[in-house]
Length: 81
Image (cartoon, rainbow, N blue to C red; front, side):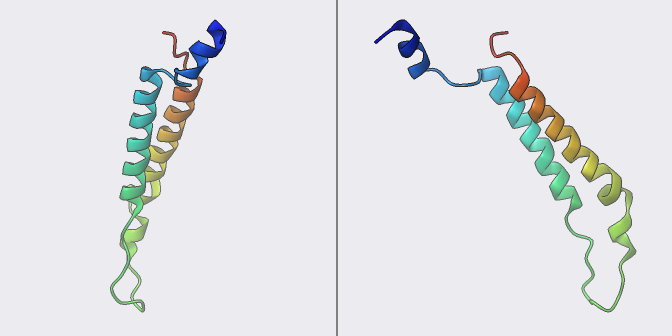
């Protein structure tokens, strides 16, 4: 075996820092989806205005997008730093 094969055999694709950033991004995405949930009505014939509140229309999708941006950064960040 050459040095290159030995090095690549036992190493991860990303560094420890990259995985930590990915975990943070996944947590933020999960929080965004949790905030989007709910708001339904018990009675299907009654409309519930709560579905259009700030949390579900603005905050939750913004958190999901921020989480996706963090994930992209974690993939592109240099693991050698």
